[in-house]
Image (cartoon, rainbow, N blue to C red):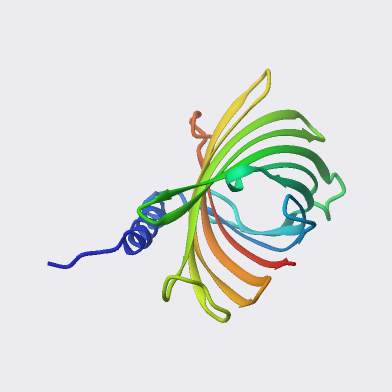
Length: 232
């Protein structure tokens, strides 16, 4: 009888969950999000992160009609303090430009408060993040509550060495609201990363986003994310 490890089971389930939504009748909006992330550790407790991201849209949700445009770029900055047991508290700020090449381009200022901690399941490390965000946009104000859980592990052996690939998977639930409306969203992603050398890695992931889950106007985004990480 064939037996499977918890890591092999996670890969199989991740692929299944990612491909299932593609059977739906409506075609998802296809987008690409490239970016760079820089993390500097100041001492045993403090670190900061700066990231730059953009997003390119290719098609709209529904019938798959083409809509080739840059729909955002953004800059994020985070400061993180490490507590006991590798628990972490972070404060962050983001500035986003929406439809930056349009005459009526919008903007967003976002404040983030985050608590991150690690748990284990049969030797598999799970990263948990709880976030509260205040979104100040050109057209509205929203409060956002987010919870994500993710895992990564090397494809060969128990430890990740330079030049090797690793698998990543995660899921995030997002609820946002103001006095006039609310919205529920789910994001599931899987991907691969490669450690080029200590402090430098590239990750490529496919993320399936379902938004407006508590209304009749559910939309689906299939987003490819490529991020190069630098840390020192």
